[in-house]
Length: 76
Image (cartoon, rainbow, N blue to C red; front, side, top):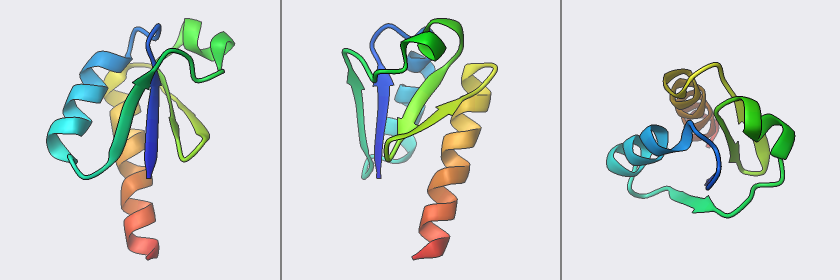
């Protein structure tokens, strides 16, 4: 599972650190750009396996990513 954050997104730091700490086995990176500039400017955003994930705040973004990880894990 690839999780990418944009360098310029305000919500990335807390979520990135938490995911790295709790799920060190995942492929998580901060990139210069994830090519969702309109959304990136306005809200916390990440891509999970190239799917855009947005939320109202960093905690909600983290929760959505965790839900996707669990869904992927349970599906295997």
